[in-house]
Amino acid sequence: MPMEQRGVDTIPEEERTSTPRDLVSILLGSNLCLGVIVFGWLPPSFGLDWWASVSAIVVGTLAGIAFTAPLALISLRTATNLSTSSGAQFGVRGRLVGSVVGLLLALGYTALTVWIGGDVTVRVLGRLVGLPAGEMSYVLVYGLLAAATVAGAVYGYRVLLAMSRLLAIGMTALLVLGVIAYAPDFTPAALPETGGHLLGGFWQTWVLAAVAAGLSGPVAFITLLGDYTRYISPARHTPRKVLNATWAGLLLGLLVPQLFGTFTSFAARAALDYAGPLAEAAPAWYLLPLLLAASAGSVGNAGLMLYSMGLDLDAILPRLSRARATCTVAVLATACVFAGHFAIEAQTAMTSFVLLLTAIGTPWAVVTLIGFVRCGGVYDADALQVFNRRARGGAYWFTAGWNIPATVSWALGAAVGVSAVALPSYEGPLLALTGGIDVSFLLSGAVGGSAYLALTGRTGRTSGRTGQGKETAAAEPQSATATTTGAEA
Image (cartoon, rainbow, N blue to C red; front, top):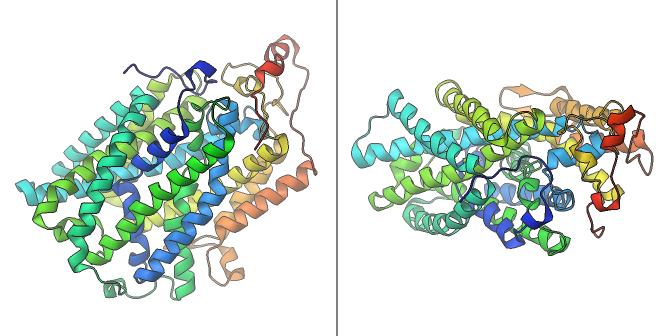
């Protein structure tokens, strides 16, 4: 299979051969891994019992999908990734906000996936072949997983799609075996080792679990969905089918592994750590399947995240090829893996990361969605590529390439979100106004969206052309044929 040559440029119609079924496969197969499973461990580690943990994950996931899924329709129209598409609202340079948010999201989840997958791999190999759980063992396993991840990400979308199709079947079977393996030791009672509810009260802790474990899953895809839907043709597949496929892929791809993580947390009594108890509690016959889940599943998920990181860095630094950008961010992600294992406590790191990135990313997604509704799904695909061509002008030039109202609205929303967040080691000053309950997701989105609507008026300004001489003329929209077709939402 040839290496993908496309970066964040517009995908030609003849190359847009993926289907909504492929979208389900990639969202399901890539998420059936320990990097997603481990989020199901968070509610039990916060001191919640089985039913409270399940309800928090389900409610949070459904709310997150309802908010995130419509973003998939944007790249269906623009034929490029979501951060580049957001240039229609933020400007062709202002869309760097989305690229940075996407890069940080993918970086964190890539590191987390390799981290937890490597930890479980070392523990299982310790039981199978007596591998010592020393620093060199972790370094070796992390290095092998990272190398395999880079290989898949560099080859690109088609290889990752084929891998996801296999993982969707294989990992489902491994998880079914896992339920059978851990079922005899399952208990629905809260784990006493947690010392009670993490935030002192039930509802504060339940909301924290709903955001950190449930909502954060779909929100992680706010900049990623377009990486896959840009290869689907709107001429052959309706927006409704793509939206339904996004819902199905996210719902199955997130709820199945996370609820498996919750189930195994109670069965393995994994109160303060997940990887160790999971490996120790596994019956001998399940050790090999668990090893396959930890290694192959982690490579599939981390490969997809690393692929998105490469696209985001390619969008930030257009001179870099997608392959070079992917290798560059792989080094950074691997460094984060080692920092996570050797320097950071797992629960604190995971919770802080997802809550902060959710607060920062949500207002960007809200502004982008408002713009999608306002333009009726019609974009000037050529004008979105001005920054990548290192040109000037075009329909989305605004003020020197930045739409100031959109950027200010995002910054206000992000600032409010960070001020309202409740982390294990930090509490925002606005928590006093919310009764100690973390509603940073709602506040950041509401403030960002309201500010954007207020600053741009009822209809908003969809273009910002300024005279820039010959360079501007070269970057102006060519004709209606340059605009993506299909205005039905």
